[in-house]
Image 1: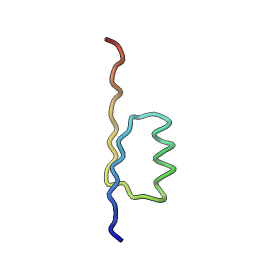
Image 2 (image 1 turned 45 degrees about the horizontal axis):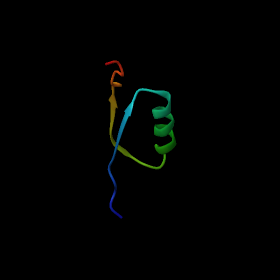
Image 3 (image 1 turned 45 degrees about the vertical axis):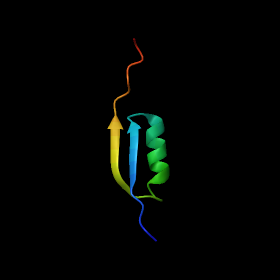
Length: 42
């Protein structure tokens, strides 16, 4: 079976860490990209 490449795009927050730790034993991440949140002020 072909190995899938996973790129994890997230912000630095608790829920992103939960998802990462839940998946790390099942998948290999090709890259992890942490983005800064966009300001909600106008």
